[in-house]
Image (cartoon, rainbow, N blue to C red; front, side):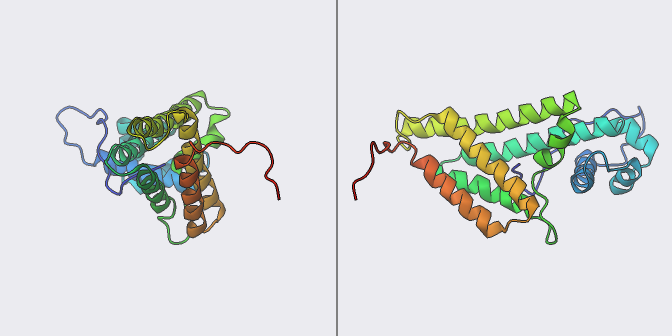
Length: 223
């Protein structure tokens, strides 16, 4: 979803006692993620993963398990890093509209990181297809979407308390709308939409969210 360029490390996998680890866990998972991201889970081979990660198969299995376990680890890590980036922005002192746009700008920078073909979002771009028949992937996908919703919701609740949003606004619903904008940009970027068009869409969405407390017009306007 949303990531900063520099990623932190995750829990280290088991290693043989007395032998130094000859690889960087964070770098290995990033390389695996990028390989899955490009080819999708089903089409990505162990040979491709081994080559990308600079590890032979026995080392890969010993560190991360089989292909499925490695894929789940890359999904969980992507969610963890993306959420940390979102929380950092949304937890800042930026005004609501600026904070939301900062999240979307970070997302667009990630989705369009390739100069050739936009990559979109790793989570929605690969996990949606696998979730239909893989319960573990479906659970990780659902949990990931929910934590992104909650991150937006926390900022919107704070905005309501500070007066940026009116008391009768619905932070839960607005959070789902904010997430929907993020997911739409991810899908449309991969489909080939121009970055500028998607940013304009995000701006319109932010304006709608921030103006959500405006009263609805009743009845037809006379001409």
